View 1 (tube, rainbow, N blue to C red):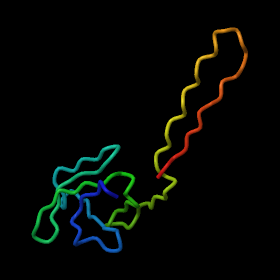
View 2: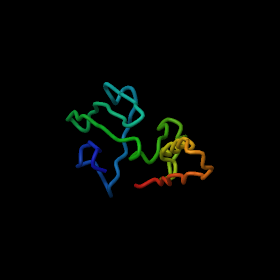
View 3: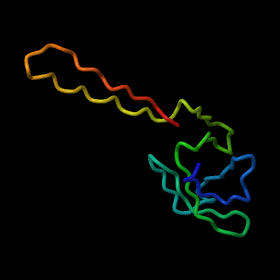
View 4: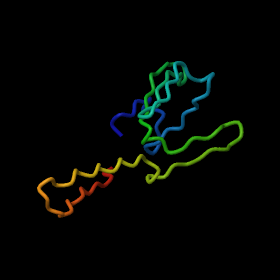
Length: 103
């Protein structure tokens, strides 16, 4: 994903596992669109930014409990509002717009 900012040398097979604990991160910001923090990898500090849609799973290292997300878990776009009824006296039903999720 283009908006992912992680140290590339730690990426394996297009994936990276991040330990996002209180002691491992600084400035943790959890938002609706992304997760951002500053973390140390080896002896170097990096600014990390990961879009929420790129997160495949979250688990607690201490307990091993967590969850894996599927592609269908992504946000669903809101339905289009119904257009107003025609005011010219006709009872013709307007056609609804069709929306679909494009990934």
